[in-house]
Image (tube, rainbow, N blue to C red; front, side, top):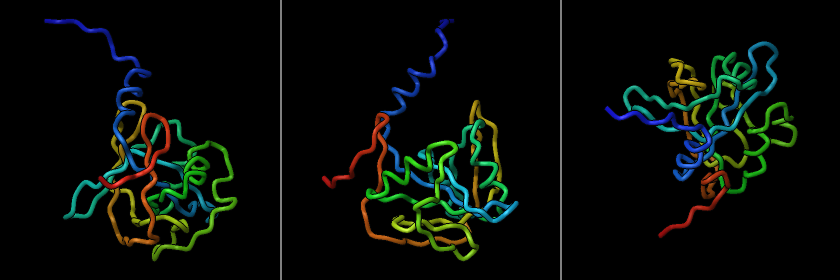
Length: 165
């Protein structure tokens, strides 16, 4: 039996950061007062076509997720290359995330951010504790493409560009 030292969080972040991800903004109208709320996520993926499910992970320390979670429906906005500043704002705790953000309501009322290349309207199906995060599995109710652009990418802690080979 071999004994190895525990994996240091910084090392995991460095190595896992070599996997390129897209960036989404998860948005909703807060259940308590209808104010827009949201957060940036780069741990998003589709799970199932039948039933239609997606998932993303949220840090347990997130102060924005409880506001989004309080809504019946929320919207996963797939961010385009031109939305880097918006992504940074949605990733910053305590910032005025919707200050300069234009949006229209999805069929269920959640904010669809102008400039997003696609949107997916969802509701929480299940939340699964996983270490210092929760895995959110969400049922898809509606979706569409929204704006033509390349995706906003994240790699090694920096934003990047998509290039066809």
